[in-house]
Image (cartoon, rainbow, N blue to C red; front, top):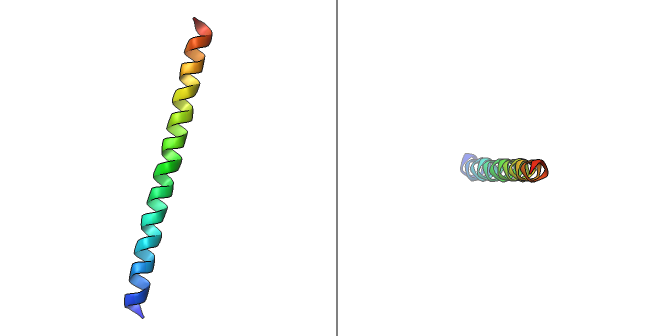
Length: 43
């Protein structure tokens, strides 16, 4: 049973990392877009 659990936990961690990275990318992108919008407003 351990052999069946191992790939599952590994895949779960892998997916979690991908999701976390995507969320970070989205957050950084929206943050960057916010900065660009702010800089455009100032000019």
